[in-house]
Amino acid sequence: MGLVPMRVAVWGPFILLNFENGVLPEQESDFDFVENQWLGSSSQILADGGVDSSLSFLCRREYTIECNWKVFCDNYLDGGYHVPYAHKGLASGLTLDSYSTTIFEKVSIQRCETGSAEKDQDFDRLGSKALYAFVYPNFMINRYGPWMDTNLVLPQGPRKCLVIFDYFLDSSVKGDESFIAESLEDSETVQMEDIKLCEAVQRGLESPAYCSGRYAPQVEKAMHHFHSLLYENLSD
Image (cartoon, rainbow, N blue to C red; front, side, top):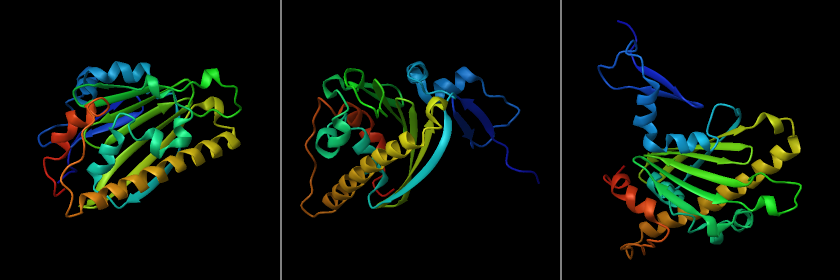
């Protein structure tokens, strides 16, 4: 009459649980196996990009958004297409010509240089480059400057989702309250802009005039790759 057994493994700053039936906790998870199963061949790129356990947890923010969870994922995966239009403040700190998307087995990695090194500014939350990783089906890892934030997207119904943001910070700036407050304020601005965009897309999808959107192959490689997986069941 004991508790249900499960396997537990650690990769970088993340603790992974396996709820599959018949998996016993004494069957210890091999690190390389877990790394390959979860992240595939992208794992080393993420590790080299600073996704590791050196950062400390700072805070959590949650957003309830009036859109299907797959709409939020689509917005994240558009290869920076919406950034110069929806996020003018963020775009001003990015070198968008350097934006690239690399697709792996279950992960899409978007990378962009920020140009911060060329600018003389007192406040710089982005650092010299930014990395945005989408881990199928509903998890995002964003690494930039001294920051890392993760986004977990949870369906709350056909037209509503909950997005949980966890923020992590390098210890070198953890005592700088002004820097933290300004960084979180900038991040909040980006989230509000994305929420407005995603909720507008949801309204468009529900229009009787909706058929399909235009496909931009130059920037939407990841969306094409994950689209059939994300939309296997439109009722979710």
